[in-house]
Image 1 (spheres, helix red, strand yellow):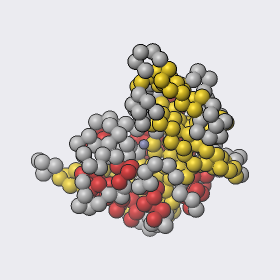
Image 2: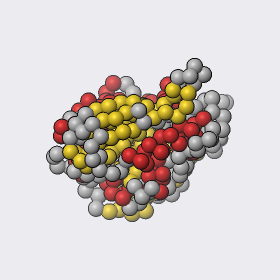
Image 3: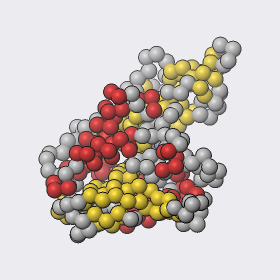
Image 4: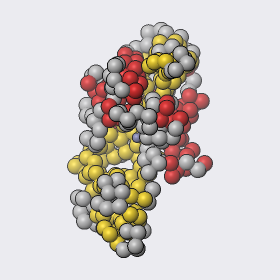
Length: 329
Ligand SMILES: [Zn+2]
């Protein structure tokens, strides 16, 4: 949707060439104060697409918020065609409590499993519904930024839904050469955008283990530069866009812990490196010091994320593994 003048989202209205911030209201608290999802709009001086970037749909993933901070500080509305919308915390309560979801929502804890929610649903469903209504009405292209949160580290990977969504994924530029389809959930902003005939992607990079200064800025700078690259591809920003020379396409294979205990990844295991089916990824030790399980590659492919919290329960997600199904250039 071209901006064609002022852009209003929730309580925020930005005139062409201006910024504005506000909230998308989803209810009131016990003191009668409005509850909302924070939104910042940078409306370009000229018309163009609306790019909406979401962070913290999982509250323990601060990389999206950081990337949005960096984009907002560098973006000049006078040079922007279209509009940039930053939603630093889609799930504000989860972000505030540094939890994946809302601990007080016993029925719809994980927003990335129930999106776009329901107007009369459980608490997190209501937040998702308010966000989704605003998103679909305003945005042409959307990305939700994820990471490994408090349990894992994820290298650069993108989930897409085909078609325009794949084009958006390829617009992320250098380094983003692993494009995946499927994955758990399937009820995310990406799928909602797809159902509306628009493009959305799910972007993965980082984890709580990488929030000391050097790593956190590296992750944030990488994401912010990729957002600018998307804006160059979609002619929202001046300058030449970068690209990968080729892309690996694949599907995610879930690797979970068969037993509880201490998870120890093999010393020489590398992410984004070809592995053969059966190659050892990690060993799990019981609390008597015995090797209780060997976790191995489920098929030929490559690891794109690893557990960084060594305590595991049976069924815990331990390794993010991609089965490669093809390449493109
Ligand atoms: Zn996430």
